[in-house]
Image (cartoon, rainbow, N blue to C red; front, side, top):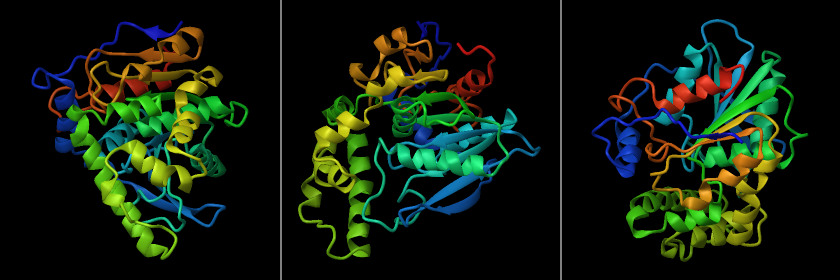
Length: 327
């Protein structure tokens, strides 16, 4: 019954609510020590993925693959911070960018979605093809956490045996409930920021592929269900936003996970409704560890000054991934 009831996270005194714990690290943090080497890999469907590698000074046989959040990329501070922490622990880091998230549009009409486990599996296979790694860990944030959990649970036989453990943070395990929750008035600041970049990518894609994508009424789409029903779902093989949410939510796949997996969701996360705290699944599973600290915000977990130092999410991930008996 892996419910972690004694979380050690305590926020700094000046970050006294979930919104500050979410926003301040996002705006103020910098992680200059990480230097990526970018690799572009071609996908079987004629597209590409950009992989950003941060390797340790010494050769290691252990790799962690980092999956970023919605509309994020490998350059975000929380990704760079995790890569730095992993490198300090002697682990190579591979932060992959979803289609359309590496600084230029992808080639195809489709882009990425929150249940896009085929691309994650492709990245895992690419990493193993190097022949360097005997052990692989997975870590992810928010949308990337959902993708990671779904990948591990939907078909455990597909997951290579080298993938040993996972740690994910701020995960919307119920996408429909999460999409409704972020539409609440107090969360519109986050929703509007996401919709701004999503709309811009639709406009870019319409210019890149003339006649294949309509932008009529794009500005009138005011929440995730509307946007996903109009674009995300049909572009990725779903009949509707509801079907997309149902099939892509990681919560329905947690019982299938067969490696030790840590989920850390803060109770004051402004993005996450109660449906995104899968306590029953963690109680059933010997593999899923659920930690729900009272504080932390969404992809926050700052300790000390937000501009420097290691964050709780990074310490917790490294401790869990490298422990002989995770807890």
